[in-house]
Image (cartoon, rainbow, N blue to C red; front, side, top):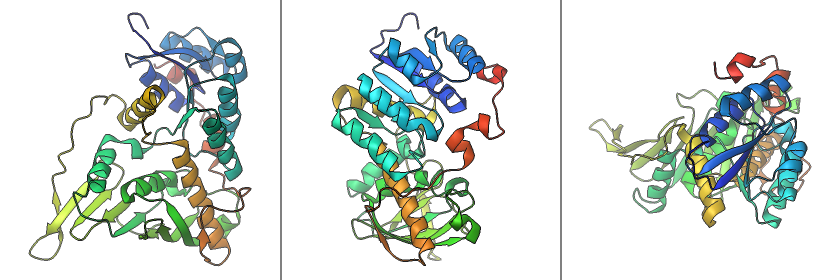
Length: 357
């Protein structure tokens, strides 16, 4: 864009609805410039290019990389195509790559993406997850600084959209951040029987227990509670993430009920696109300075691994499953919309919508 002193040259790989949100964000920041777009749908590619003033338009990632190697590649295709795009960008010499959720269907594919980036010194970031929300990050810093005392318990409530892989990666990513630990063992019960027998997570209800690497046991409620997120607690404080800025409860009233207190979160400079912005700003900082990502490819892989372990545990009669999983060929595919995109799942986007009208 004219007048910008851009430092990061960005390519958007996949320009469906979410890809367009990424394009909006990257076209807004003063230190980024979108230099190319890859999108398989001819009409949408043209409409999005005109919308954001991009003339370097390509039908796929290989054609794009044949002409330009960006600093940043935001891979926002359906999940099925992440691996191909990530490997191509890594081999071309892109400095930073991001994908969204879920990271893969097969665990070995997630391994390949994480490892190819690690081996080449490429920053591999996660995307549009609430773990990146500035308030979630702030409350995590307070927890880890000891402001609320040691965390002694945790629980997960109702997987997002009823999908332990597709939506549940939100929960796992927030849980591991707030608890300051990863999931080390899973024991689970799953229903209905037809969902357990399927190779996808659609309609699968998982209940159980996650044992965390710091010794905390996390109860898992697949459905049936008033909440939809993650709770962690200390002796006198409850932190509740329920798809928004975490609520804080501290102390008890005369009837013994928890009392909600004001969280007093600090304002965040980059607020135009919610937690997507927080994720992207962390990603850019990591590419520039090597700082820690608020959501990484490893975090996305851990979420997939937890989901797979939970289903395997339920299928085998609720046996405890230790992580990391030894069998990296195991898989759990997301619902068709996430795996193949809206065009293939009966939710195509109109050209008018893609053009921003």
